Image (tube, rainbow, N blue to C red; front, top):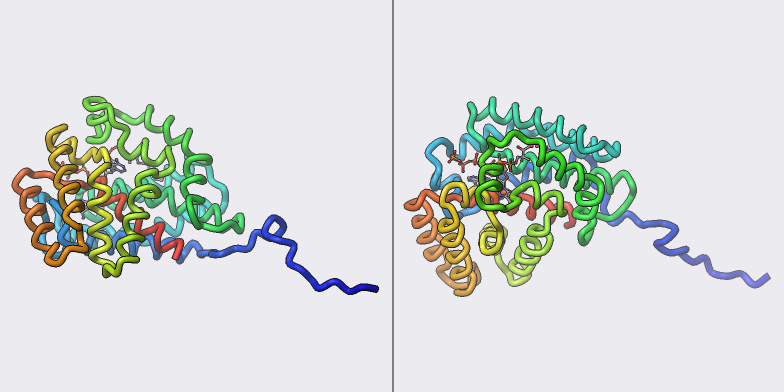
Length: 292
Ligand SMILES: CC(C)(COP(=O)(O)OP(=O)(O)OC[C@H]1O[C@@H](n2cnc3c(N)ncnc32)[C@H](O[C@H]2O[C@H](COP(=O)(O)OP(=O)(O)OP(=O)(O)O)[C@@H](O)[C@H]2O)[C@@H]1O)[C@@H](O)C(=O)NCCC(=O)NCCS
Ligand SMILES: Nc1ncnc2[nH]cnc12
């Protein structure tokens, strides 16, 4: 009999897992990403270990306490994603994490956006791991959009109209965190990730690449924190500052820290803070870690 060499039946039959992160490693990656976002400097108007930017009610220590309170949450929500949990179950975990965060910070909102954004991405990572599917390309985005997108939209219509985000939605007609999540984090996958990867590829160190990524997000994101504090004028100012920084070469220009530092001081003088962009920077760093 003519013996044929054994061939691999191909990916259709054995979707070869490229990456199978455990819930524990997903949780760790989320915390590391939030820590990396906090440490990045200079970031316009935002809190870092160097200063509190435009925030009088919090500093880096507040963020560390907040991070400590979230240490079990991302692992738990990844596990829920592995168990194919519906959005209602994820929401319960998110609300409980928000309560722990507010207790740890004595009522200051440090990580509400991150609990929501990175929580959904962690659940998506758990879901893909359970199905033995790769996390590469836009797989995480597709899971969030297709599994939970509709429920997130519905959740948004039922929220009490008291949050800053919902006031901005009513006054300026932008969708903020809810629209970003329900549509599968387009700013993370189409803006943040390419900017981070390109900057690293061009030789930037991790801190500089994170700052470059933040400016790329700020240039285009309808950031509800900027709109809440500065109205349309504040958002436009922030987007134009980011555009000018990037057009001048961003972090790839020698001495870029002086330019970024000057923008930081302008934001502080105007009491502006791009909190939504900072959250999406953390979400981008998280996706990058999961895919690396
Ligand atoms: C669904 C919720 C997250 C509620 O969202 P909503 O839009 O109603 O409102 P906010 O309470 O304003 O929170 C949304 C936060 O999301 C971040 N964000 C802003 N723009 C965008 C964007 N375009 N895309 C993605 N994310 C965005 C941002 O987070 C950062 O800002 C927070 C600080 O904000 P604030 O309290 O307004 O503080 P200051 O500017 O300092 O105000 P003052 O000092 O002047 O008072 C900080 O947390 C950053 O992370 C937005 O603020 C949610 O509440 C909800 O439903 N939660 C329960 C469900 C859940 O979490 N589930 C998780 C698993 S599914
Ligand atoms: N570093 C930071 N400073 C202020 N608000 C934020 N929201 C998320 N990260 C932040």
